[in-house]
Structures are given as C-alpha cells and as structure tokens.
Amino acid sequence: MPGPMPEVWKVDVAVEVGRFDAHLARLTADEAARAARFHRDEDRERFVVGRSTRRLLLARRLGVDAGTLAFVEGRHGKPALRPGAHPRLPHFNSSHSGRWVLHVVADVEVGVDVERVRPDFARIDDFLWVLSPEERRLVLSAPEPCRAAALATVWVRKEAYVKALGEGLSRSLPDIGIVSGSHGEPALAYDRSPGGTGRRWRFADLEIDDLHKACVVHEGAARRIVVREFAH
Image 1 (cartoon, rainbow, N blue to C red):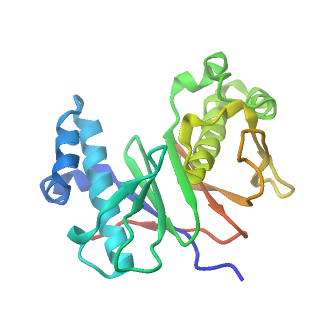
Image 2: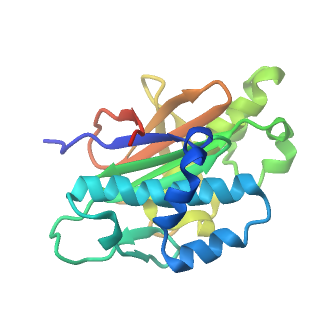
C-alpha cells in the first residue's frame, strides 16, 4: 500500500516579505551571511523566505522547535535533515521562481521544481542542450504563442526528476526522456545516464498560476499529491 500523500506547500513570497525580519531571524549564521551576498532584493527575499518556511514546515511535521533542526547536503547539494532523535525523518525538496517558493515533504525520495514562464523560453535553439529528441518534438509541436509555456513544462519535469535523484544538473539531461503517459500524465520513458534504471518514479504537474509551471516527482507507487497554501 502507498504511504501518506506527499504534501506540496505554496509560499507566496510577496506576502511573506512583510515578515522578512522574522524569517531572517530563523536562519543560521551561515544562511544569513549567504543571504547578505545577494545583489538583488527579490533574490534575497526568496532565499530567506524559502529557508525559513522550510524549517518551519519540517519542524511542524516532526513536532519540534524549528531552531533544533540541522541540515546536511548530499554529494550534489540535495539537502536532508541530519539524523538524530527522530528515527523516520521525512524527505523534502524545495524550489523557487518568481513570487513562489514550493516545498514538498514525503516519506520517499522526492523532488520539486517551479519556473516562471519567461519569453526567452520560446527560443528553442537556446535550450537544445537540455532536451531529449522526444521533448524537443513536444515543444516544437506547440503553437508558437504557447511554446515558452511548453518548454517550461518540460523543464520543470526534468529538473524535479534529477532533484529527486539527488543528482541535479550533474546528469546528462538529453539522455533523460520524459513523455506523456497513457492518460496524458508525464512519465519517464528512459534514463540512459549511469544509475538511471531500477527505480520507479511518478510525475505530477502542479497548478500554481497562469505565469508558472511546476512539477513534483516521487519514488514508488502513484499517490495523490496534496497542495496546500502556507500559513502561520
């Protein structure tokens, strides 16, 4: 039987920036120093709100004080909770773009990605290094006014997948083919990179708003994904 539903939390940075000082106070000294190095206010705000709300959500899940959580990073930078007093730590992943930060929490390996649909996504030649032949055909088959959205859709699926693997952009992205399944849902057709076989992955496109595309990928049997609005 599948386990609990993976939860995706939508955090509106435009709302949370009104609590910026409280979010900043929740960061570690290293995180605060990193935040200070951002040149653009919007990048700093997304980073601070993202790190703070991630800590809050995981603390709620575990029933502990947010300040007690400590994080480690995998070989390619995927964060995880440091093993400690809790025998069954949740898996999680985060992404941010535009006004949104997304966090996903699950009991299996998981990845999430969100991207604002940018006009330059319509310049398909600039993104050929990312796409498998099947994905290229999918994007090129879209009407020209919809091409940027089609590329963003392909991109978030692939990014969420490699983040779930914990390998990020270290993978050869054209060697990964994500296509439409029998019911129109995204599905992994192949992964020709080393280590890309032997595990089942489920994809779910997420409805965020008209300006963003998002996808969550988790290991194992299909489950319903629940999307929640972050609130204090």
